Length: 76
Image (cartoon, rainbow, N blue to C red):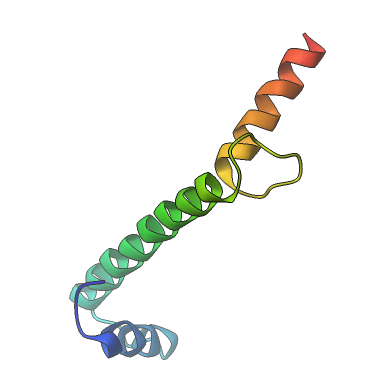
């Protein structure tokens, strides 16, 4: 993540105290966006490394999408 390691903590603390400035709110949105994007990338990598064919009950997106696709095909 970009920025100082304590920057996110500082901004979250200010937000919780209700003293976040508009510029700080914009920066916080950017930092949270980076975290969400990294989480999605990590989930996909774990899912792809976890198993080759989709597995029932797997919480990762690729398996969930395959399971949903298979369920739609079975009910059609």
